[in-house]
Length: 318
Image 1: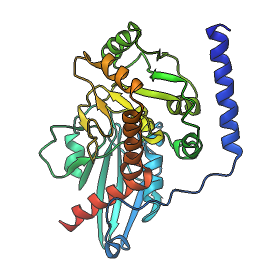
Image 2 (image 1 turned 90 degrees about the vertical axis):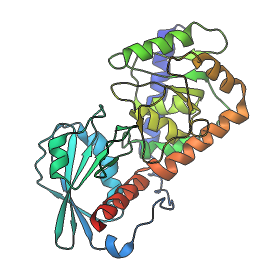
Image 3 (image 1 turned 90 degrees about the horizontal axis):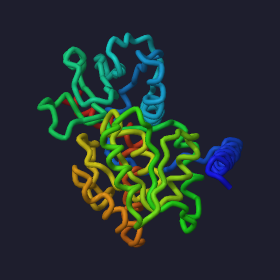
Image 4 (image 1 turned 120 degrees about the vertical axis):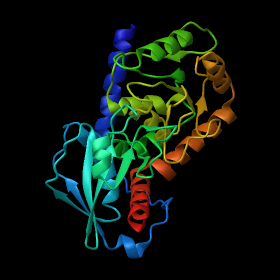
């Protein structure tokens, strides 16, 4: 069978699997303990007005999971709220007689919009620079992924992990991060110590989740920003991730050697790290288990929303 036929077969198989997932009853929501304590007396007096329309139509992909998470804790109503800033969502939080403007900046660069900062009470920055910003109004905003993750994830996690198809895996687009991605992929393709599976083609989201679950090691490389949806998918599925060092941070920092394994900035140890974790099953599984646990504690939509409310309550308490 040539590669084209194999790719076509894999695509149809993934599509058929997704159709089955979609018609099956939606799995019950995970009953997870919140990782941040929320004072119920304050929480009971909070409500949120959420914008009906975003400045960029695709922002729906970014914001739906966060919005759905917030609805689990407080009353959330759609409202007409002007959205004057590119790739920033403004929403209102009402507490007693006061209205607070909250900003969520999901743009790929790590800069701050100074005009937006002046008009808001709290500024969540998803690509939060490791060096920080020297302003207590600016806090890490975490990161999210496609809302469909929560529909598919229980089925992906239930796959038999003993039947791994790929040694080292990663799908990347050509349009962003070409220099680092190109260098990393060349290093991985030129070696003979393990099988490296990579294509520049995009595939159905369900197929990418299946491939992650069937890989021993998954490689994370920056795109237009240091973080991307791929990283959160890796964590959610529970992958052993080897990543180019992130220049940005999450609300709870990823720990090198526990949740993730970072290469040197020049990628000189990329081949060795991949080979090591392909060959050492116990250590690989420990990283993968910690990655999955990290997602469940800190990045799942209900946990991320809990963190946002914790930061907001701290803000209004000041």
